[in-house]
Image 1 (cartoon, each protein chain N blue to C red):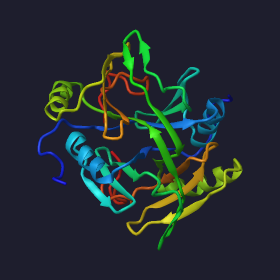
Image 2: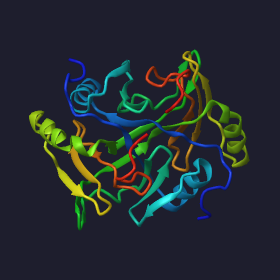
Image 3: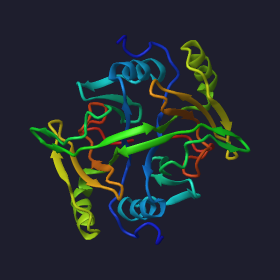
Image 4: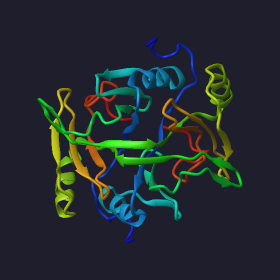
Length: 151
Length: 151
């Protein structure tokens, strides 16, 4: 490995992360209720949910995007994810007790709770497709330290 | 659908998005060179790459996480993504010409270029596993409008 190129155009952040799901309505209901994400677009193929920080969670019906999607604006390339995926959302440390209570109230079992050596804390649970969902505080990764507030 | 719960604990943003890859070294080299993401952790099972905005791209070796990972801090639940996934990274509009030139220099074909009705522009290309990677400006989604600068 040669390391990052010295000069390359800049990425600002993640804009969209995707999960592939068996039942779109079931998953939308889960992400609205458990994570609090509002629906911003929904059709038979997919649903886009707004994530704070100007980001988007895309839920794709399994097998529904395995052909390119022709739109009036251009062609969206095909993709076709499968299996049990992992995604993690950032939360504030002060909200952890509320997260624990919220998951319990919603009958979503906590599968694991990890206190990381850099000070971060993760809570893991499953979505309706058994995707491994994590909410985590700062302090998991060196580029997201505990002691520097989010701007 | 009943809409988002009136009161739920807050998510701040996406922290980690994951791709499942055949050859970890090959994918790490691609994301370092093409996207400019530095390696922050790597072992035989996975690699974490830093994404600007205090986020992380996780590359998992296909099949390498299908059992829970026991660590001294707790147990990381199993997951096992498959297939051809989609992920999108946010870029500034002023950087689009540099992105186009960079992909050409690196022999990464542009599969599609879309100008969206809200003013956003997307460039799509493939990673070594044929995952559909997109870099996009603001103006794709209503929660990420063109005319509001990122804070």
